[in-house]
Length: 244
Length: 266
Image 1 (cartoon, rainbow over the protein chains, first blue to last red):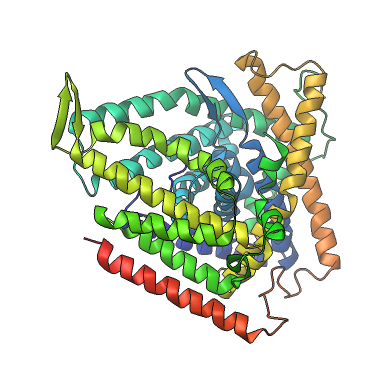
Image 2: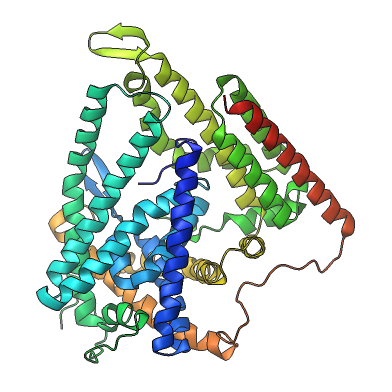
């Protein structure tokens, strides 16, 4: 789900950098302003947390699932959004940069547009989880956040690629419709699985370390968490469900 | 995933082994020069100019002394992703049909686009790899800081990089332990998914707890008191000749970039 160098016309990837610059500076400003309402240290505390979670997500992006006829991997941008709040966008920029460094996925020119494709849905997913959690509990909003994060990223990805290819040369209409329809349909099961996976991870975190779900958005925006969660030691049983 | 894949740190290893002129090119001028070339290459539309891109990129790679097999190995990442596009574009793009077989038609515009994408990708990929392989990450971040990238973003990148390998090893350990306890990955999606979710949840919890300790350790070293984690790189050796040569090379690279940009936009 990363656009490589050389595919997009210059205005499109430059525009991607413009969007990323705006959203990154906005995210960082929101975090700083939010922290002023609490204390300066709470903001600095967020940074190592965001860095280590970014590293963890980078590592987890290696999870491949054998879904015929190929194997797929999760995007996890919805999960990043709901755990990191506004810091999700800069975290995604950094994560994608290391994807370029380590695997050559994506590219230096397309870093901005790839960050926008993954980061905008992540911010939206974070907002959905935050609002939905007040009314629907944890599981359903987490599922929705996962579905919206992955679904919107897929749509943006193919939208940008097709816009890039058709900017210089007209596409054969029937072929374009067929390809777009097939690609989006092919991703529907994966998007559903991403939602399920996100909700399972979030439910696990709620049982084991609820602080992780509470302190990114409220502290960032200067709100006070309505309850102090009880910390429970993580356990991984034979079946791996972490039940107490 | 293999351990060295997680590390994402081929940079320092290769840089330590060979010290070509490209390695000694100062980080900031190198960043500016290579990025100028990347931007110019990405803008090229004219087919006749594409071989120039290949020659410049290959020449710089040759100067660096880096092995070609490294280039081939790393090309596998973007190559696999783009090869699908390259396979369908001749049948999908454009209106000038060169050859038709039943409902399949090969179009000239599609072939031209494949050439543009393939050669631009190869050249930009080579320059990016050159930059990343010959510049230690810390120096690269310091150069980015001098270009005005916010400290917070650079600190985030530095801290992420610092813990990537450790978390990668931890993830491998957790998977191995689970396999020793009887987990067979790939056997059943219904069992794999909840299990992998809890595995990732555990990794996130450990990372979160670790981040608290990292924060305390950073505080003890003065973090949050105004001093940035990623400082701008100075020039301790004050080697004026090296600095002048570096900026000269950057001027040359930007000159080539301007020429390519001027000729290639048609």
